[in-house]
Image 1 (cartoon, rainbow, N blue to C red):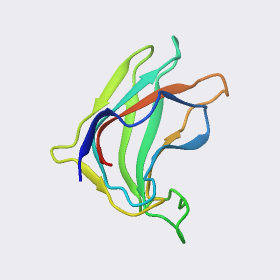
Image 2 (cartoon, rainbow, N blue to C red):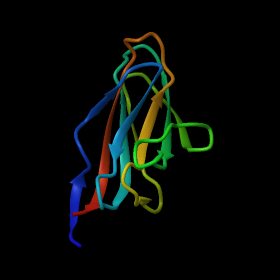
Image 3 (cartoon, helix red, strand yellow):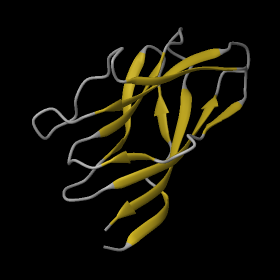
Length: 121
């Protein structure tokens, strides 16, 4: 199979107190997540976010929990964090997801997320 390199989707905005799937494995694909860029859009508050690798649940997206969390990151005001594991995170089953939970409040405190890597096509 050939690899499609680069962005694994568009920028995804994650609102405060929300968990969002920022990447989902498509049918019969494998994804290799090399980095995740997370930008705090709030100019006055630090945002804490959690990154989860969530296996599928019956072929659909599973639910993020303490057992799927791989990182908790505090991002300073109006700053960007590059989460880059030493080895790519490999998602192999249809419906596997990378999810981000934004712990922030109030609701206006959003973060933007961009997932970079490769996928087999």
